[in-house]
Length: 311
Length: 276
Image (cartoon, rainbow over all chains, first blue to last red; front, side):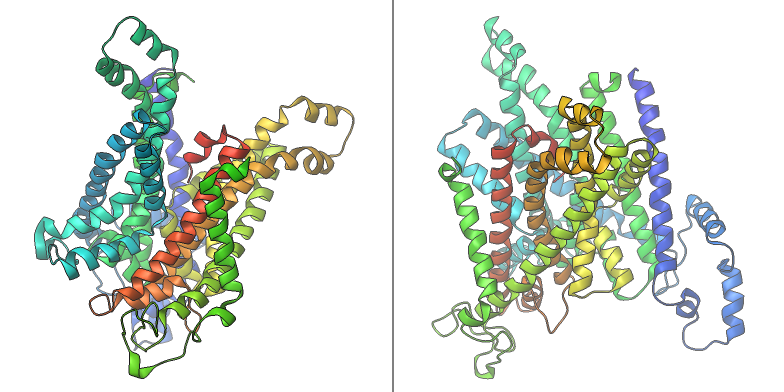
């Protein structure tokens, strides 16, 4: 099986997952405590109003029929209206997307910028004190809850040193508002990437083709870049992909601590205000994004390691 | 052999310490967790209150000592729940294979499509906060990892000659499972359980921090951290020390899990590194 076929097959496999995800998300409105029509009608309404609204919303149809209707609307970009503001859910998500994307990309830059170089250094200096110190640091980085690291960063850099704003978002402070959030969220990923890079480089260094490259007289820098790094990159990319879910989880927490107007915070506030259409919409959005990102990572994986597509 | 592994010894000591502290909280805490000292509100750490006090004049050290009980309890119960359910699920799927396995795998794929905090928050939104619900939610979101690990391990163990021989001898399904398959799973499952303790304590803290977890009058490290968040300008010590408690405990379980993995089966390293 060649690469194009692999891509098509992998993309097709994502469809049942997305359908399953959408069905579970669809169920949220039905499992949610309270009658949605009552929540929508507000304080003054008659049973007739409720019945009319139920029929209007299609809530009197069988569950599966309701799901098909709902999915049809979702595919046309209609995620319903928020209970709180009566505005379309999709609009609210799109409005907050730049903040979440900046946070995700920024923390990825922090993670890759720190994690991969440090991982390579620890692999090359293995069993030295640098290696031990960095490995302990990495484990501490993984163990610190992101919401606590966020608070500590606020205490140090916003409260004590007053170098950076404690939160608020880009509308208020521009890109400076994103420095602490990206540092907080990026740190644990840097630690994960460091560990993975270290073990991956160590494994690659021991391979026959690296010995061959050295034996034929290639310069050490060339061996490292051409033979070690290229092959060591593959498992590291898988980790980046698998950890995207934690990144999104962390983003929800990070946006909350730093009061960033992102999609995660929208989801969080929708729980407090029992705004189930918003909760449904944000979860569907995040889960779909996650599935598609994983699809991209898998394809990238196959591009880097052609054997994957042929298995 | 294991005693020479210093990080693992340190981790084990740390975990035992945390468990002892939570078990003996009433005897070792200098104050009761809800004792209010109105003359000493938001006092910085000092001789009377080693880790300072909060906005109600409650002793932060005592709150952290008592908080350990809920944090550890939630961690242990949810990990146990996830382990039992996940291993049972994975065993059924991996042993019987066929359409059962196919269906289970597709369902697991769907569960894995949700970032874990998002899934946890959605479940809490449906069933409400509270300590029992948090245990339930964390157990549910961690079941897929155990199911997938168990299924994967079983599929490889099943190929072994002794399993084939046991079947050829006419042993019943449940006997083969209990006598020949499950003992081989103990290692990998133990490693995943240890690492899951770390994530469970972390997730509880996250949910409680968001106000979606443990609710008053109970308090955990997450709630102490959340309470302190409103006072980081005047009393940064509240959140700081609660976070140190969480981080150290999580670090202990992560170290122990890593150590156990290296000890029990180095081949697992890659397999499980992918799914933490």
